[in-house]
Image (cartoon, rainbow, N blue to C red; front, side):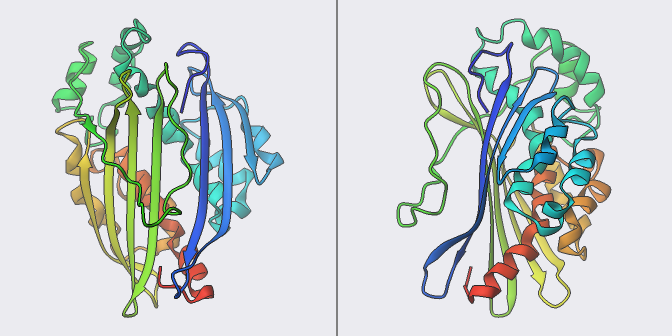
Length: 308
């Protein structure tokens, strides 16, 4: 997420996803991929959408909001991508989260966002009470925001995710802009079968760059799950809240057990029904919902006889 024209102009979202399978000889192969470019104005209204593979139906998203109601519109426009769990749908489904959190990249660039927080923070904070564990109404962060006080954020210098012995572990990633903010979201869902057990490891990270070009993590979760291969239901899950902005945020991690026994393919819907309000976290919930694609990845894995 970047702002080539500055904070007062559109946010540019450039995204890429792929399904990568490794066979029994440790040979990696990309089975599907997608790219997405979206521009969004200050009100979170989509001003342009282009994708590869192309979907003409996505033009109907232009002029509509990237927040409330977006996912319902998306599901009606590209139902086949939803049903097939395509990389393109994975990217499109993430837009509500990235359009919400993206402008926070300016928090470290105080001169560039002068006046922005004071115009929006107090008015929006009241509407955000109890939307998640971090903004619970009896917590200090939301009380400070309602009072117009910018709460302290827990930001941690990023550990390098690169794997020197596995150059295909991550996409090629461009450097951040030299003189303006950027927020980057990185997602990983790994599926492997060990002794007949389906094991899932997932990573979710939001990070941003300071004017000194230091990458700082805003949100980072690890997810670990096992899946019953016969029923494709979630049999065990744990969340590791590694970096979160407020002391109130990690409480959500204890509630992932609410999903135990759920069919994996239903998680995009069931997470929004079961892990709600202060039981959940916007970012953790997005990571949980992405596990709906585990059956797709497992089918691809089985087709090539790969270990993971």
